[in-house]
Image (cartoon, rainbow over all chains, first blue to last red; front, side):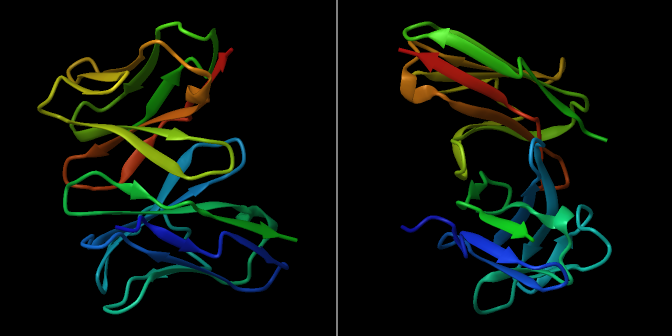
Length: 112
Length: 112
C-alpha cells in the first residue's frame, strides 16, 4: 500500500512564474491537507479538501494560492506569480474521516 | 486560537538514556493529538495518535500521555539510540476541524 505521494520533490521557479504541486493520497483516503513549512518555522495549515470540495481554507493566503482535489487525479496546490517568500517545503497529508493523518515526503520550492 | 508549545527546543543526551519531550496546548477542546518525527530534509512520520478520550498510547520504546484538562502531553522515549536523533513534533486537531496545529518541535540528538 503506497504512502502519500508528492511530486515534484524539488521545484525551482523564477519570480513571477507559476508553481504546481501534486499530491496523491493513500488508497482509501478521501481527505487531503496541505501544510507549509517555512525555514526555521513550524508547519502551518493551509487548506483541507475532500473530493471536489474545499472544506477549510483558513490558512491559505488570499491571493495567488489555490487548491483543488478533483474527482479523478491528484490534489493540486497552485501558486501563481511566485515570490521569494514562497520558498518553503510544502507537505501534503491524507486521512480517512477523523483519523490519523499520513504525510508525504514534501515538495521543496525554491524561488530564484 | 490554539497554540502549541514544545519544550525544550533542543535536547542532547547520551545513548541509552530515557528521556521526556513536552508539549502543551492552550485550548483543551481537542479531538486528538499526534506525535511525529521529522528527519532533516524529509517528511513527517507519524509515531503515535492519542484520541481525546484516551490517556496514553504506547508503541515499542515510545509512550505518549495526554492530560487534556491541563493541556499537556509528554512523549517518553526509553533506552534512546543514535537512530532516534530527529526533530519531534506535536500536533493537535480541534473538535469540528480536522486541521492540525503544530508546535515548533524538539530537536533531539542522541550521542553514541
